[in-house]
Structure formats: C-alpha cells, structure tokens
Length: 394
Ligand SMILES: Cc1ncc(COP(=O)(O)O)c(C=O)c1O
Image 1 (cartoon, rainbow, N blue to C red):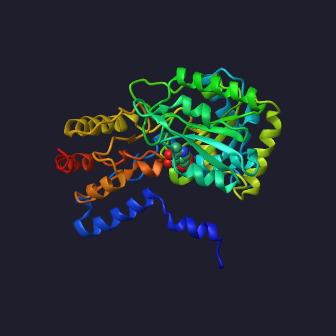
Image 2: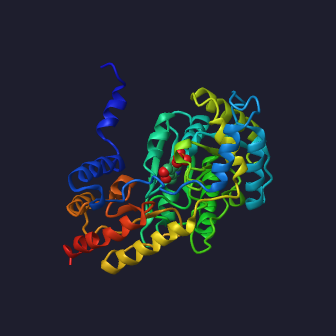
Image 3: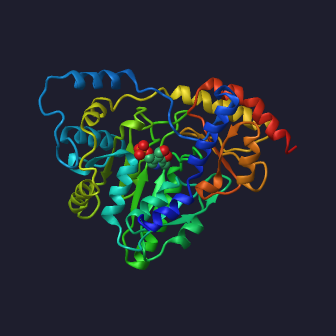
C-alpha cells in the first residue's frame, strides 16, 4: 500500500464528532438547516472582541518593517513576556518570557510537549471523559494514553483508579480544566489529592511525572467560578492553552506552552520545546496573531452569552427528564443518555433532527455531549425535539 497502514486504518475509525457533523450536513439538505439542531461540534460562534479586531487592523495596515518575517522558534519575546507576567500574577510563580513558547493552538502545543518529553512506550494518564484527540497526539510521538474513569456523581477523577493506573512508564498526566465534555471544574482539593498520589508513586518508582494542564476553556467560566492554578499547586506543571475559545480565534491557530520555573532543568525543557516547535514543522506560531493576542490579554468573548445558553439548555433538559451535572465552565453539557447504549441513543435523537455526540467517543459510555456554542434561536427551536425524544423513554 502506498499510504501509512496505520493512518489508513485510523481513517476507518473516523471521529464521532466529525461523523455527526457530516450527518448534520445531510439532514440540513433534506429538511432545511432551520429544522436541524446541531449540537455536535465545539466551533465557537462568538466573534472576537472589538479590541482584537482593532489590533489586527493596526498590524495589517502598519508600515513597520519585519512584521512578516521568521522569528525565534519560541515566538516574539515581548508577547511571551506579557503571557508570563499574566500567569505569574494568577499563580504567584515567577515566570519570564523564557518559560513561554508560542504554539499553533493548544493542539500544536500538546504535540510539541509530547514530542519533547515522551520516550517510546511511555504513558500519559488522561481522565475520562476526555478530549479524544489526546490519544492521537500521544501516539504521534510514540506514547500511549492510559484512561482513568470518573466518579460519575461529580465527573472528577476516581482517585483510587488513578493510583492503580500509575506505572513506572507514566511520564505525564493531562488535566483539562474546565473539562470538555462535562464543563466541570476540578476542585482545588481534588487537585491537591492528585498531587499527593503522584508524589507517593514517584517515590515508589523513582520517576518524575509532568502535570500538563490543557486549559483552552479557562476563561469561559460561570457564576464567578475559579479554575485553580496548576502552577501554584504542582511543581512540575506545564500549561498548554490557546485563544481559540477565550478570544474566538480558533481558525487563527494561536496558543502557548508555559512551563513552571520550578521544574528541574527547565531551561533544557524550554530548549526542547522550541526545537520541537521547529522540527515538527510549525517553525513558529503565526506571527501577526501573536502580536494581536499580546495586545488583547485582558479581553475575552462575551461569556454572559454562553451562560445564557447554558442556563436555558440545562433548565429545559432537566425539565424534560435528563439528568446532568451543571457545567461551571466551557460550553458543553454532558447529560446521561436515556438508555444504556449511548450510540443507539444518538441514533434515536437523529429521528428528531437532533445531533448529539455519544459519550463513548470521550471514553465515557452512557452519556452524550451537547455543544452549546451555537445560535440561541437554534437552542430555543430544539426544545420540542428534546421533549419528543424524552417522551419515548417515559
Ligand atoms: C480540551 C481541548 N483541548 C485542546 C483543544 C484544541 O484547541 P486549539 O488547538 O484550537 O487551541 C480543544 C479544542 O476543542 C479542546 O476541546
């Protein structure tokens, strides 16, 4: 065969989210898009704040020379310095531009981190339900994920299961806070309990485990909820984040990695991250948009708009009979399917032109994910469809 056998085989296992997205396009053609309720994909509808657009205009129209050249593989030092100082303020951990590498979104950042830290066969612990791409990203660099199930009453990790999952090959854990797909924010006390478990196991195996905080939703939180700072709690903390959600810039592919100054030999880690940013072919994160986010760290999309959607959908779904943990952040709901088989349940929902994603796709069968970063009137129009679907199970 001319192509990679592994990739061809992966293609046939195509992602659930993509599959539903394609199903939606078919339904829209048949019934008209206003009669299809697509909750499948996390593509934020929110436009970037005015400040972002103004900054972008400023750079596009600027006469300044050199704005479009290559730069340091880690990105513009002044932008990295601003991000470092903003994280220093929230964590109390001293950071400079030397601790930050600009990346092609959080997705690019995770690949750069894995490439930098993983030896063949090493393991990355993930907490179900989890963002499915983690498996591909670890596999890209010779690693593999080990899935720890949740405590289903809170959707925080099952700590006994975590302790059993750690092996001498464990190199890192990913903490996605707020979580996609549940919208849950892991509490500080939970993170401290996780820290104790890792410290115990590191001593037992004489190993060193990185705590990777994948936090592209950290600015999308409700009711004054706070996302505990990973850098404050963990010594070996590495933040991976992006502006895809907080500034509505998903298509512009801009994010960063920030590694704690408390990591032993952090300068070698930072060199490795810059090197991998280069050798993975990213070279550097897109230049103009680096400058723009540097100008816009105090801006964010309208979170009240997301809250309005969360409240409306949560209230209506629970009213018609769904069970659901109320999300404190991100823009997803993760209710229990009304039958055991979530994949079958998603098919039943399709009869009402409702597009949901099975929890199986996130390592958590029996649940479904709804992405509510969609137009509000679509949510309003969808409620009778949820009512009819739920009525089937009464
Ligand atoms: C949990 C999580 N991590 C990472 C990403 C990647 O985001 P980006 O590469 O756009 O920053 C996403 C995107 O949806 C996500 O949900």
